[in-house]
Image (tube, rainbow, N blue to C red; front, side):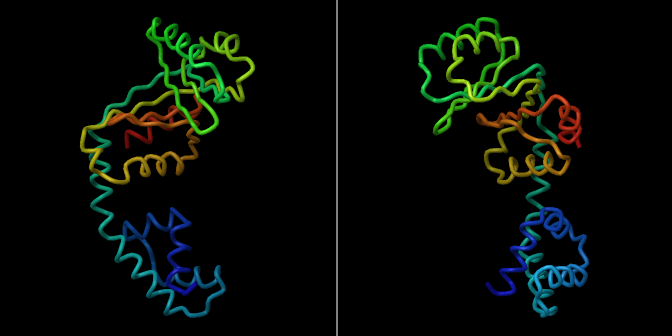
Length: 207
């Protein structure tokens, strides 16, 4: 791999450096020396040129970030606590899921069902834990309780603006917030986080 590709790989694997480059906050000489030291490359000038070329390519992303921030400023946030996520084997009976859905919807409570290749995840209120245990005791793989659901309701421009979800993941990750589950439905983006992280998550979304 040549020096340019090694330099770009180094930067891409370090979000903090990548973000600073995008915002024009980097001393490229200092960064080049650090890259050379970490990768064992002595060609300082080649690394410096590669850094500056990378920065030039990323300049256009500043406008994209402004568009993302504008969308989030015009988004509404809904929050619901006492949520759980139950991961189950996929071989459960379809009729049992329908019966569970009817019971939860009758009480007008939260229900999301995410189907993966080998598992099904049910996101709903913690009050239905015993019901799920009773109906699916053999299929349950893992229960995550004590969660909070956050829904970001964005304007329709989110459809045509790349990078919004990646930006939100980055915002949460930078603050040490673990996303237990996530999904989207048109302009709504749903995150499930631990209750202890809910306040930090809301603060991050409002900035």
